[in-house]
Image 1: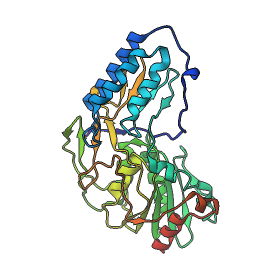
Image 2 (image 1 turned 135 degrees about the vertical axis):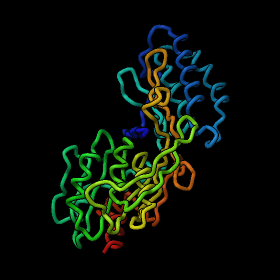
Image 3 (image 1 turned 90 degrees about the vertical axis):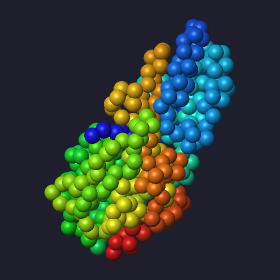
Image 4 (image 1 turned 30 degrees about the vertical axis):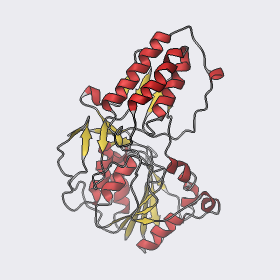
Length: 340
C-alpha cells in the first residue's frame, strides 16, 4: 500500500521581498542558472497539472531563463518564486537558506474565508470547555441536544491514527456529529484513512490516484475500529480547507449519513509518495536549495482533480468576517439545526 504525503499548507502570510532586502553574495551566476535549469526540469518532468491548467511551461522557460542568468547571489530566490508562482499551486514552495518554507501562491478562496472562522466564536456555543487531545490536533465536546463536535486541525505524524479513536469513543452515543475541517492544513494519507473508515459500514472504492502519470491499483477502504459511527454527520468546510482536509471531505461525502456544509474548499490535490525516490515532493537543487513540487495527482470521485476546483459542499452556507465579528458562526448554527 502506497503511503501518500499531502504536503502541509501553512498559511503564514505573504513574504514581501525586494532586492534591497537580499544578502547579495559573490557572483554565482553559473550556479544560479544550474538551479533554475534543475527546478524547471523538475516541474516539467513530474508536475501533474500543466495540461489541466493550460500552462505553457516552455514559455515560462523563455521568460525566466534570462532572469536566472542575470541574477546575482540570492536574487535567484526571486526568480524561483516568480517561476513557481506561475503554477498557482498552494502546495508548491521553496526553502530559504535558513530552512523556511516560502509559498509563492495562495488560493483565492483561502483569502475569502481565512477570517470567516474563529475558534473562540465556536467555543461560545458550548456550555463547557472543549476537550483537547495531547497533540492539540483535536478539540471535541458535546453540544446541547446531544450533538457531538470535533475539530480536526492537523493530519501530520500519527495524530489522527492515535487520537481520533479516543475522541470518537467519547462522542459515540451522540445523536449526530459535527466534524469541523475548516482552516485545515495538510498531512499524511494514513491519518485520513484512520478518520474516514470509522464511518463506513462496508467497502468503499478509493478515488483515483495517479503516481507520475500512472494510475495506481488501490484496494478499497474497509471499516476500521471497534465500532462504526452511523448517526448523521455534518462536515464543515470552507475556502481554507486544503489538501488532506479536502481528501477527507471528498471521501466522507460518499457516505449516506454524511452532509458537507459550508463553502468550496481551497483546491490543492497535488501530493507525493515516499517510493520511488523520484516521487517525493521535495527536490534538491545543485546549490543545496530545495523546492517542493507535487508528483501525485489525486482525484475526486467524479474523476476530476480537486486542484483549483476544490471540493464543493452539499449545502452552501456563506460566512463572512463580519459574521465572526458579531460572534456568529452561521455554518456551525446550520449544522446544529440540521442535526436536531
